Length: 300
Image 1 (spheres, rainbow, N blue to C red):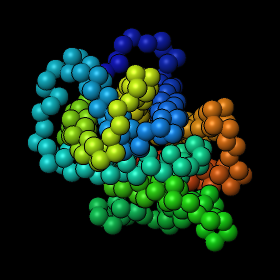
Image 2 (cartoon, helix red, strand yellow):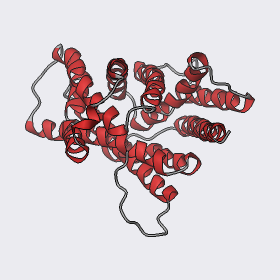
Image 3 (spheres, one colour):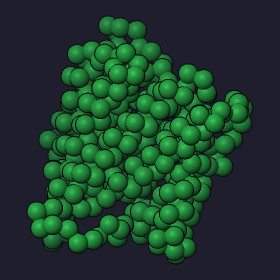
Image 4 (cartoon, rainbow, N blue to C red):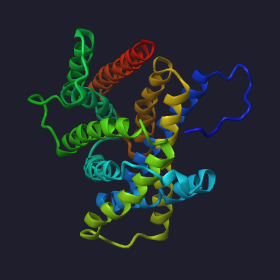
């Protein structure tokens, strides 16, 4: 994404920009999750998922206005389609799990997506992991067990759905990585909305109820937030170093805990914080190591 390259003060380095974009992403995504939790009291998560995608259209319209119809040029249309199918499945599972899971717990478990992506990269892309990265992976998955504590407390369906959705999202991250090699971010986001809107409508039709005007307003806001969040995340990793930018993603857990308490009266237990920190540290370390390995290979 070539956007947002205006004159800036000399002190506003790429890393500071990246931190700002990542913080913005955390706020957008968690606020979107909060709206989903609120709406799920009266609407089915499948219908919310449809509107979340459909109301990304205004963002795509802005991208088309800014960059032109050329952003729709791609030679990877089938890959975009496959990615969208997986994304819809993961979204519906996550939204269903989110409706029955405390906000902070859901966001802590969502940190596992990069861990699943790392495992899949080893299996399908042949990436080589040394013992430090394997140790980081095990540490992160141990954090997942710390949160759900199977065998000690009854494991609810909500967290299981979120973990399953994160596993599918891990596959999607690998696909997006492949797509971004030849397609720009606006192209990837545009096709996400174009394909996912009709795909997500199919399950929504089976549970359809017409939303009120108030609900439509909230659905519009969360749809735009989710789509903008994809753009700000990409921008954060584009302009800043992963080692500096990724720690800001932990604000998701803090913001989720704050909104969960203020709006739903939820208080995260100590296991959510411990497990969330473990998963986040693991995911951040893996992201930093991947960036370092990629940089080293590019200089050879």
